[in-house]
Image (cartoon, rainbow, N blue to C red; front, side, top):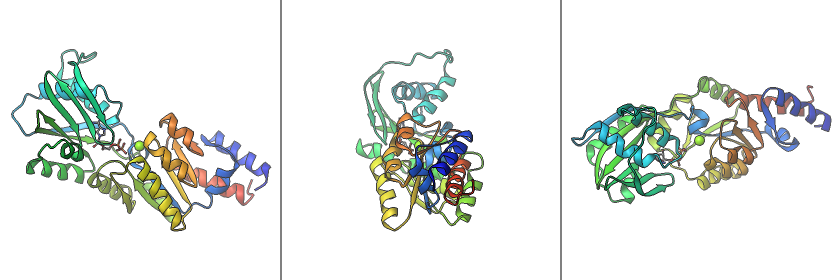
Length: 298
Ligand code: ADP
Ligand code: MG
């Protein structure tokens, strides 16, 4: 494409909230034949809410939530924020709760948190966290996890003093129109995949809901990038769409990295294209802009 065409394409993009950083990204986007999506905050709203609590031991819900909120108040994770928000409902000082002190706080990346609250060891996180900390997972907890994941929700396990005491169900619904966008992308002969740090069960349910057939779950940031490289080695021209710090290596590795505008600064920096309106339709807008530029439609 001529420099003028690139300028026009970039300008039209900007006016539609699709920020294209340079001519290379605009050139490459029309060749994309595989798009990898992050799940949380990309396919979904990224504003998870607690929708269910299942206690396995005789415990007062208010106390249960006080202990886990005290631990999670130290975490920046969206799931932690959902838990703290929900825990407020059980308190008199709902507007401005003062949680008990959490000592020895540890954030175990991709797995959960650990802290000592009121002299009790509190763990909140996924199955690997419990396995790593040698907490036995009773069969009824396993069953609740499976049920939760089948509903496309994330199950979070809670243990207190070495005993599994409860399972939370957290829901993060698909963005409106996500299914339609995926269907249009597929009709353009573009392969779609989802790569997420969340567990396999939830990932499969979400992928099914949105219409994506290829799934990689429980992926650490470097694995997300590895997946992109694997697809490139298979001959695909790959776009990655993501919002998180954990997506940035994959955004860099992709032929075209697209960041969700509402995402983290690190993802926005790593990307070639920023979708300022944070909607999925603009993945298609970006590809269309590239086609128009390349085929000199302006
Ligand atoms: P993603 O944001 O792609 O879902 P993460 O790597 O951030 O992936 O988290 C993976 C999983 O680790 C989460 O789905 C959750 O089960 C668990 N996890 C991470 N941080 C927390 C936390 N602060 N509290 C509870 N669970 C957590
Ligand atoms: Mg994300």
